[in-house]
Amino acid sequence: MNVTVGRKYKGEKRVKNCLTIREHEAFTLILCGNDNNEVARKMDLSPHSIRTLLAGIYKHLGYKSKNDLLVAHLDKAVVQKHIDLMLEQGKIKEEQ
Image 1 (tube, rainbow, N blue to C red):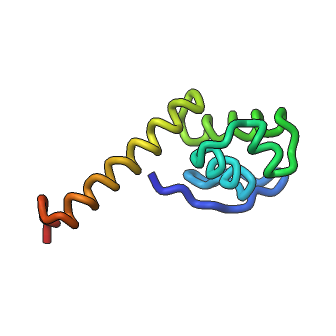
Image 2: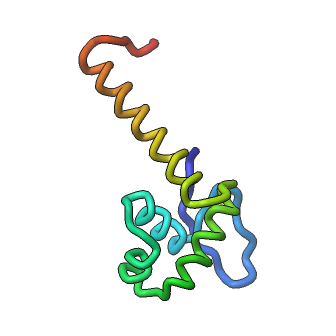
């Protein structure tokens, strides 16, 4: 899934597959293994604000929970890393 970063101003409609800058920052910190309190501290926001941001991210991207989000994105990263390694080792070849 490609996720675009963009601004969202008060009253502006959200663009499909587009996170606000703040949502993208929280999304990235969560994917890097930070819990809500760490994300709040790093973004200088309250834990409540982070929960609200994450709820918006889950809803916007179609996930029900943080676990759904992590599984979907980390599984893709692990699979891609494995494919890259197999390509390097010559075990598989890229289609032309």
